[in-house]
Length: 396
Image (cartoon, rainbow, N blue to C red; front, side, top):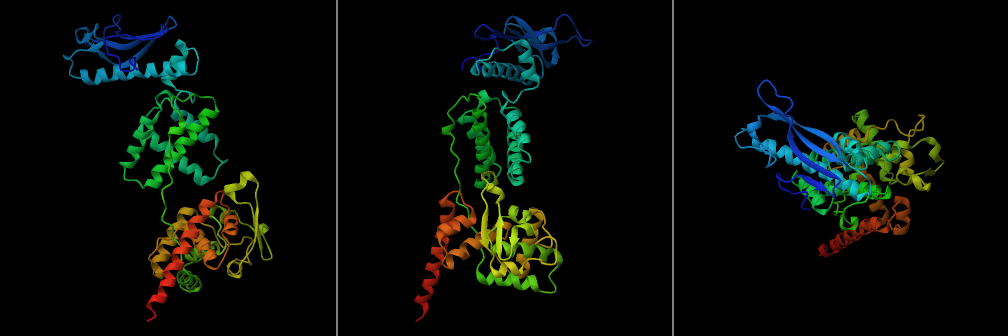
């Protein structure tokens, strides 16, 4: 757009409703002989003076060129401030035009000094993110909070009118330059796109087709434990030298290995969910659908419950502490794999299929919304079977 990149020596105009030019406050001279510099805007014929935060002598200001002369030692920085302020005013005016709203002097003042969620994308994200607190998973909320922090480090403000694939690609490059895993970058893009979808539902017109924005799901390395490794953890769980915090962690982890429950569902578990050998619960991730799951508890899982307590487990640690303990435990028992809370879920799925379980049943047990999520474990199971069949080649 020519207006966005217009030279400093032409006052900005927008359909005759808004003009802007740089002026000195000549009616007041400071002790050092300088005058404050302003961006003078006229909106629908009403004047708004935006201070630029610096002052210069009259001889240092090029009125015709609308810029600070080179005889001022800081002319480059000052001219950059001028251009950025003019551009910001233009973007606000464009945003109103795209929304078919009339821009007034008061609205320009408000949006310049305190952008509202309908103009500034970052403000929109922050506003709706706070509204979602307590309504979505804590882990999801923290993930989105991290994305907002990344966006704010990338850009202080981001108007909806500035959005488009060039801006999104620039954000993607910014995150990749930080040496992040591709899964983290794509998670940020997924969160970014979720807010853009929400904005469209609120009637905000985006200046580009959101379908152009593609978010990929990188192939994750799935870590799971075999029977021997689970046996080592069971042995350490029963060992008299196992510290209480590690034993409490293993109680929950091993229970998950035989049930496939997510950490969030384990944290919610109470005796009301267990009746005899049946486990009935509503997975937190699918709670909004009101779908509950009831399954028979394997004997190994039942043996891990604390029948003498008011809760099924001795203690549930935060997910961070839980994973820290698992990391230390894996070193002690000699496992070469990085164990996290989700490894138990992967272990359950892999063992279930290796023992002859049906993939559709596994999908129900794992509460997967898409069969493709479950098929990952089918591929792993098939690969392991091929590896084990290969042992026969070494018989003679």
